[in-house]
Length: 172
Image 1 (tube, rainbow, N blue to C red):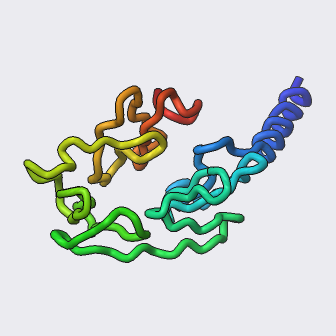
Image 2 (cartoon, rainbow, N blue to C red):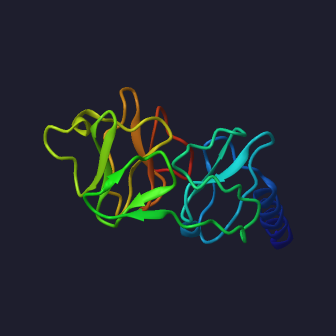
């Protein structure tokens, strides 16, 4: 009986280590213990930051991500440029607002790093779109998902908007 149980554990470990990651699922990041998982065939593991990377179709990395292709747990992800509070930001290049602030939209062509969306700014009506972050510890951005989407937590550091539960490792 011990032999059968041990064989199952070894088999499960091998299968778990060779399985790949489906589209929009996490494939790496320092908050994930420096583990790298290979994406399903035809997908690329793109780094959003040093903390998070997910599997996407080739050439679809959002412009505000680091977009480094993660090929192993030793891939070096560059740090973004930090924008001070109350300074202009654009959410379109690899930048981050200083801790405690996020990039909020005042008009269609102007945004600033602020601790929250000021009253009367356009960001009051903004929503988070599918597969974008909507929560997590120390997260200061938008938290309201677009219609027909819900904010699902993967860990205490990361949550994203999705139309259905993204997988078994998520709080659904």
